[in-house]
Length: 92
Image 1 (tube, rainbow, N blue to C red):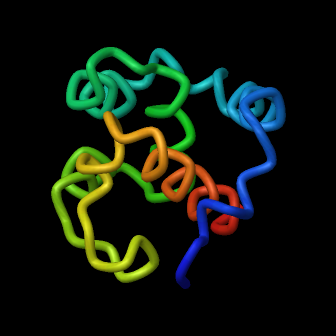
Image 2 (image 1 turned 180 degrees about the vertical axis):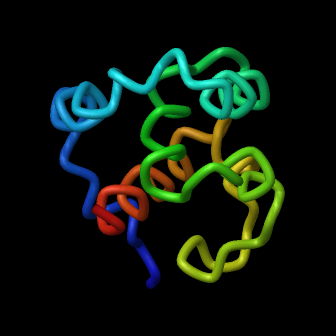
């Protein structure tokens, strides 16, 4: 999975994908996930629908598809956030 982030189709494409899940923004689980993401509700909605109600815990786990790093470790890294987004889109 080397260079998975190279498959990222751009922020505009991600924003359209993220918009598909915004209807869940008021779910309590989404609020828990968003809190761990520094308030990123859009990403929290995607994680909630792709991972499930334990998305907040998933953020803390090493994920094989992310080359065994935690999703939380991807949030503030411009390359790794692309990797995370690609993985979430592949789960769709």
